[in-house]
Length: 129
Image (tube, rainbow, N blue to C red):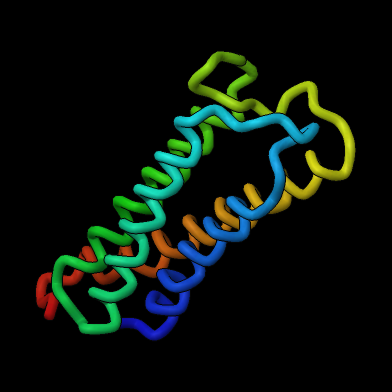
């Protein structure tokens, strides 16, 4: 496994934890779907990381799937300007907390894309170990 892929896979759950530690915009309580989805993708990312460290053949695919799910989840949960009990969009919030949330979201997006970019050559390789 690529050392860069292992580092990227380690960074994704760390970025998810950083995001979880940043308070919700305006001090509001976040919709319950966010912590549940965040926990699921963070556990998936940790399992992918452990698999990559152990050089398991399934680990790059899990890393990509977890990264795609993370990006899709954040897009649906935070990026769409639709407010409901199942979403917490960043649209319409002001202040430093919003900036911290957006910065942590950007960190996750960059990290998830990094995992995908590093894993794709591994997935294309016919001789995966």
